Image (cartoon, rainbow, N blue to C red):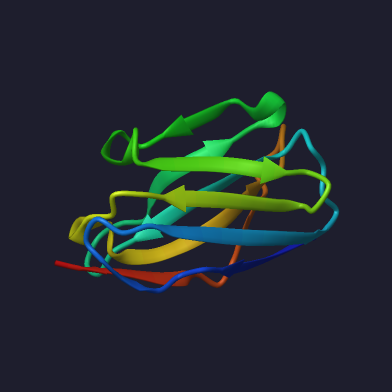
Length: 117
């Protein structure tokens, strides 16, 4: 089992920055993937960024060059640095933990990010 607790969501003006954090507890392995998804009202949940073993990363096209995902394995924490925020980034952001070589996924409770124009 894995428990995830997100923090860092807030109301920010367009062009501003936020850093989201997600602390994982339970059976944590560096080979597993951690990532961030988001869901805006009336839309499907979408992948924002993910980081795998060896620190390989991938990003949604809409956030490339603006968002950076990073991971501190010693703290079992994944971060999402979000710069140059846009109103369309407004959503609930969810932390995800994917168990390698399995279909197991764990989710946090979500943190609200609101970007005003």
